[in-house]
Length: 553
Ligand code: ATP
Ligand code: MG
Ligand code: MG
Image (cartoon, rainbow, N blue to C red; front, top):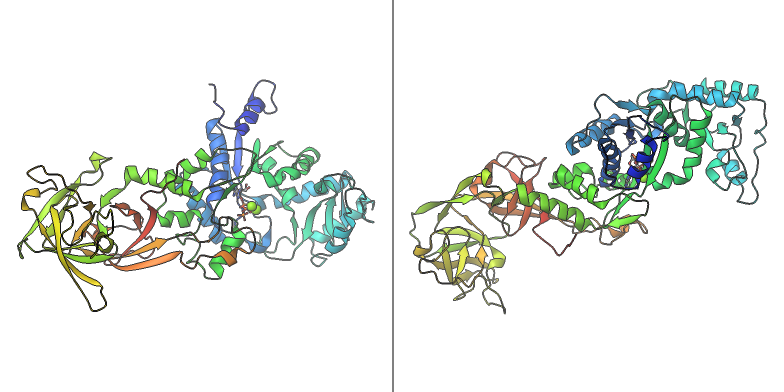
């Protein structure tokens, strides 16, 4: 069957698996290789989409690999979280789960092979000296150890492994081309000494392979056909190919680079995100303001919104920054279809319907989601005292104000009755304590019996007799500038990125809100019950996204 290419990577893959291609007739096999030193973020979602998506389109398979060849900063906590996030996003790697460290022995043997072929040598220059001697483009410098006999390198490399030398004392370097215009080809270091315990192999090893040597090795060991990565690795590709060509390996993968996702108003590097967590600027990796997958999930993002976002951004080689607003657009689009409509008042003020009987209460049946009739309906109660939004009343109207003010226009209480404001009371400081109104008993359901036009707005409300209290968390950008990566990102932290509203009033049906459940609070936006703090008897909602803004995709 013909596969329609959706991007340039697909074109390359098609060529490779097509007649006479490099991997003709082979199953497309990709991998997603996170380093378990932090949580996945929205940038990784793009890589995941590219890695898993490319395999999916070609009927291939994708491995999950923990790239854990650097012992200093990895942790099992991250391994678990990465798997969880991937499953939540809807991806599965079957039984193809690997650790880079699974191949430490083979990598060592590969290095021995290179020494035996005269393609690697043990170098005793310090890091400092090496940096100085790397030379510039016109005057390459050579290590005095470059031509040492291979027997000597073999012996020293064995002793490096045996733990005879301290960190930094010597390295193993590939012997390639000191005059190369590509610095990555000027005898790169492939092994260094590091006496640090590894999260899986413990103290078995005290020498560790460098990323540029380990990565092609892992790809080849796992029979990856296409190794898809971000463009910063483009200049590393010649060395990637050198490893694949010169070490005896079970397969010859091809590296293809694509542009990383950049997004405005946030940082997307695990190192920086970790600073936010460790310095307490946010409430953990899953703080709803974080661009991490777990933060977005807690904020109320859905897997579909994130997948749509990744897919629609496309895949190319040219770097670009995507608007955060587009991510929000994708969420709003999904929740508009799925979220149940409810009423909640964030800044409550009492509205008393003076001509409504004191002891009366009635119920209205309202639709849960006009976009999904199958979601059914529910009952809401109505009585003489209601909560309405403070901003839906003004003691003195301003031009074009169509909501409540004394002797102002008739307004519709959503799904219930028509009301007209008659007055208000205020405390000594001028704060409105109560608003009064009269209702039209012949407008049950919201439409006047005589068909007259209602000039005011339709307002949301909650019955004070049955309302439940809620805490609502309103979020804004974590950073005040478009590109916090320029300069010190901590200088741009937004001090007002979290606003906590307490004493909000929600309709009684929300009393059973389950952690992670999403709702549209009518006229306000989409909110989800917080996965950590929302409990029976304590309602806590996160605002996921406002109802709309001017964003045009
Ligand atoms: P960070 O730079 O955030 O610390 P990283 O690049 O070190 O992340 P890895 O765990 O090594 O993170 O990344 C796993 C995969 O995700 C790599 O293939 C990497 O290229 C890719 N990736 C990381 N950030 C982005 C991004 N912003 N856009 C697309 N792909 C990304
Ligand atoms: Mg990395
Ligand atoms: Mg990176």
